[in-house]
View 1 (cartoon, helix red, strand yellow):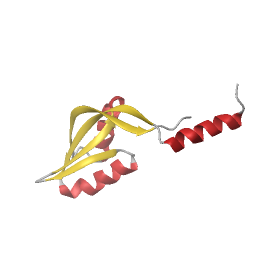
View 2 (cartoon, one colour):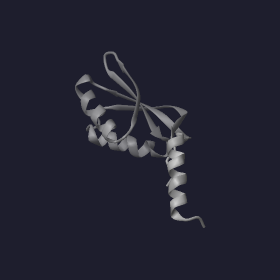
View 3 (cartoon, one colour):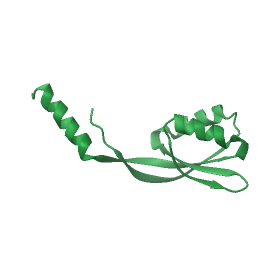
View 4 (cartoon, one colour):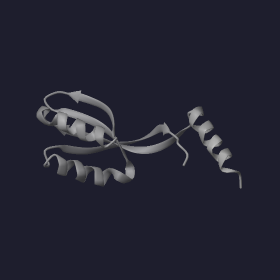
Length: 103
């Protein structure tokens, strides 16, 4: 086994190199009224969800990346936090790159 200092150096090198990993996410379309948009945006940002894009028309459509395994919990959470005032539609799967941080 290598000394702890070598493990730390290796981890620092990996972080500096900017390694990434790919994960599968479900794109979720959240449809809400303009009056609710600020609250939904706040909840998503504080929940560390990635907002892919926002479309504005008669309603606001917020497209969010959600880990595939977390979609049911995400839908329940957002429905509860907004008193069921949002429509949630599951769209396509996508593979996205994220920073890889070793343990």
